[in-house]
Length: 169
Image 1 (cartoon, rainbow, N blue to C red):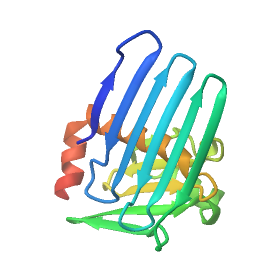
Image 2: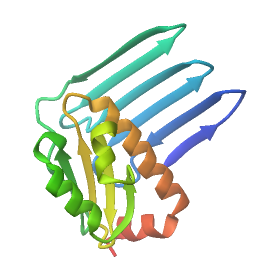
Image 3: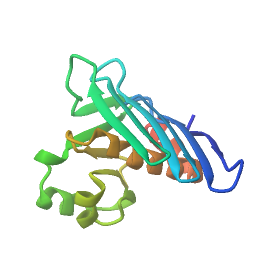
């Protein structure tokens, strides 16, 4: 399911509970903003690299950490049906590759400009041919959760594209 829950039960409170829409890679994100605090729990590729991140900011106390609990590295490609999800390490994905990706036919990109990838520390991109590409910073796995939430919100709002990708059209 894409965005399982997006609620605003009170002033300044938002909850996201996301699971991967695409069959691969598998991830779960729980993010809760309340008042001036927030809680994030993020798990990426639990049967492979098993990246586990927690971030708590409550009463001006912040505790954030990520650990790679799996034995394998993050795979460069995940396949499902007739589609591929490419996963790029930002360290190995330079400015030329970023600009080339963003100048090709695009259905969705977050961030919107290639120049903003360095600030966001991640990216998600869907090309018109439905090639999905994620980019991550292996020194800041937590940033990837922000990009993954954005692609899940996109899928929630664009069901036809989501279904075309899922069915390999």
